Image 1 (cartoon, rainbow, N blue to C red):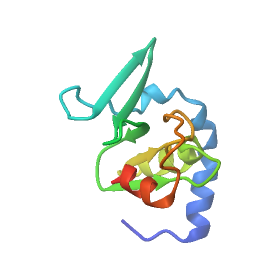
Image 2 (image 1 turned 120 degrees about the vertical axis):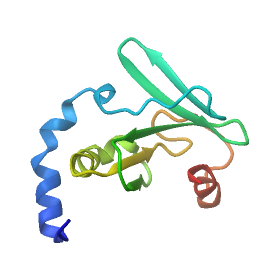
Image 3 (image 1 turned 60 degrees about the vertical axis):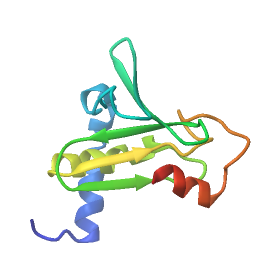
Length: 125
């Protein structure tokens, strides 16, 4: 695969923004219910994949595609949804793309404790 320039990468991501309107259930990788700590909650036609951390916090994540993985981690005050355009772009180019909502953000559990970089890194690991 040829190396992309920053300009090509940004242009490619912008060109697929309309695809971000597609339902995430079309892309979400359903985790197997037998995996320790992983759950796949289904409500209607949409699927919600989560993992439970050692301290019991439920973390939402998206896992789309197959191939070499790319992990996206958002900053404050965003969520995994802010990566959808980039995830669609790389997913369509043969990568597995993974993004999560940090604890206290998006669809992850809202917690009083653990809202620091060390705990965010532990949750991601």
